[in-house]
Each structure stands twice: as C-alpha cells, then as structure tokens.
Image (cartoon, rainbow, N blue to C red; front, side, top):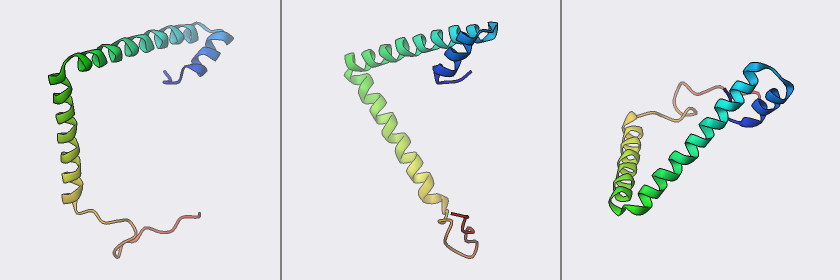
Length: 89
C-alpha cells in the first residue's frame, strides 16, 4: 500500500478488485489518522501538564541522541586514512 493516495485512486478508476479494496483501506486509514491526530492535539491543548510532559520527553530524547552522537567517536567520511572515494559527480 502506498502512502500517497493518487496512484491507488488511479488504479481504482482503471478497475480491478484489489485496487478498489486498497482505496477503501487507504481512506479508512487516513480517516483514523486525522481523528487520532486531532484527539491528541486537543488533549495537549487542554492539559498543560500533558503538553509539558511531551515537551520534556522530546527534550530528553534530543539530549540522548546528541549525547550518543557525541560519544560515538565517528569521524567525517573525508578525514583520516580511510577517506571516502570521490564519486562521479
């Protein structure tokens, strides 16, 4: 199943039983995503505590990712003895 609906809509217009089923499932999935996103957004708007928790979790995740990258000790691909070869461009 594709995330972009237009190829599925085209196939459903051209015919075929599976294309129509895919279109129906895609529309149901889009509807569920919109309703769930609106629900979570409304909950975060209504509750300052929930918004602060999500904000702090995002900040902690960002710190974790940055810390992991900092201590990974990875070098840039063009540094050192194992320099990456220059591509055709």
